[in-house]
Length: 361
Ligand SMILES: NC(=O)c1ccc[n+]([C@@H]2O[C@H](COP(=O)([O-])OP(=O)(O)OC[C@H]3O[C@@H](n4cnc5c(N)ncnc54)[C@H](O)[C@@H]3O)[C@@H](O)[C@H]2O)c1
Ligand SMILES: [Zn+2]
Ligand SMILES: [Zn+2]
Image (tube, rainbow, N blue to C red; front, side, top):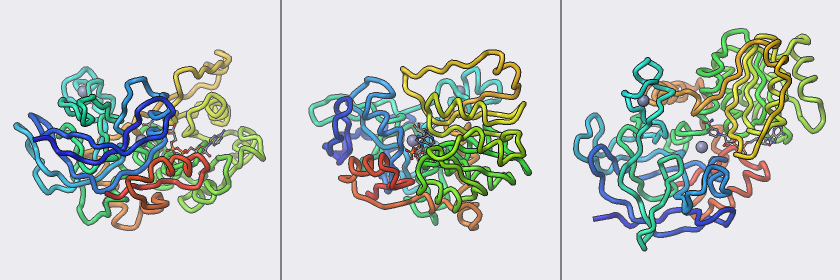
């Protein structure tokens, strides 16, 4: 018997989201049904709503979630009813060429539920990032459930499911920030500020937060930025160079996803430094750079999918650091809202008023 639940759906490009009744099947082989407790509002949900990811409307939004396993399907091991889990959108397959080479964070064949969730009239929904957790319950592949310490508050733990993990991992995993490094983070929203926190955790000594909104920069200082730059008042490249002895930062993390900020990141890094693109561009965006600069500046230009995380390795560890008071994950929760508040949360995100609005279910 499918479960009738309330869920937030984006029906067409740019249209406001709506609360709908959605049918969630019982878990089949390899699947898990999860009762969602909390789900953060990520910029990627807005990208979906605006058609910036693809055209597979209608979307079932929400993907930064924690909850409790309600049932598991045939063949599922290591996960049972009642487990407290953070949902991840990259359940690795273990068999593709990346997995076989021992680099599962690049897995090219990540798993999602195979049965569809639908509207009441049978219309098949596309769950955002294979999750769809602005819903009382959702259906995922069992591998998308990562067990963490149930003492963690769902609103806080769920943030590891996307943006906060992406930012932390952009610094810790992709950027390989080390002790004594200088780091600049362009765009200090939920993702960028998590990169700031990750740089602090890694022992970076100079951490420069860059944004166009002073409120974001204030949060950045709270999370570990030693300096901040407002891009509307200063030349970002010049300012970062000045703060790093004239050289540029060892690692620059771009957490906006726009050509102009990528260009800043490219030129704000030191020779042989690393640029990490964690912001997600839209399909029409282009960038032109002198190829000689790409060559001559050396170093590495990387992108970071989900912070190159391995959920099973990283989520429990980060929850433990949070529980020990060494990683202020709770600082990312700006407000707790109801399922009806997602559209307003998009507006607040747009106006820069929040790091994360988190829906409690
Ligand atoms: N790579 C991944 O796995 C991954 C995961 C989650 C989110 N993302 C992407 O990361 C990006 C950020 O997400 P978020 O949830 O933090 O969004 P957000 O809206 O909270 O943050 C974006 C920040 O960028 C700032 N900004 C905008 N234009 C700027 C400019 N020209 N210069 C400096 N700062 C500028 C905004 O003021 C805001 O603080 C989005 O593109 C999102 O899709 C990527
Ligand atoms: Zn794989
Ligand atoms: Zn996200």
